[in-house]
Image (tube, rainbow, N blue to C red; front, side, top):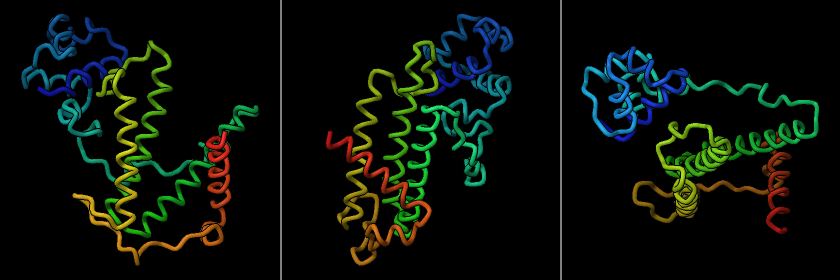
Length: 230
């Protein structure tokens, strides 16, 4: 089997709120054997893999960690939900207002970043910028998720005691790669951007091209630089 199977097998059981005893009985094996499968002590056979996939209503590829889609298909753009204005709703209190305002600053600024990436049309730069941003989101989500020690860590494949150092290192690597690509320096797996194709940007140009979004970006920059200067 592989390293992802025990984690995903455990996560699926916990998502359904099932005890090991109940799941083992339904799957026709003993509880100790299921425990060994979930801990990665023993490898299961193909028959059990198929039976577990049917039981949890997922594909074998999902159980093996080969796809993030439970049905086994590749995720395409149409599978990703559109922006929902409800994400900006907030409770009528100070904390809710701050949350809503910060979400708008971040979402609007991200729209500008990805529009610039689309115009530059460079796969490597888009990949590295996206991976950097996703690493930041991953780190923040895991920090919040892990604040309650009762929350199972089985949804993550990287151990809790090492993820922070590694995800921060990944952020630096992605940022460095993106900077080199943008400056026309060679990166092994990506083509760099020709200097003549770089966009000309200034506060006035940004305000003109992103009339409804630019104030969010300017406020975000101002807020972060205030924190930096402290």
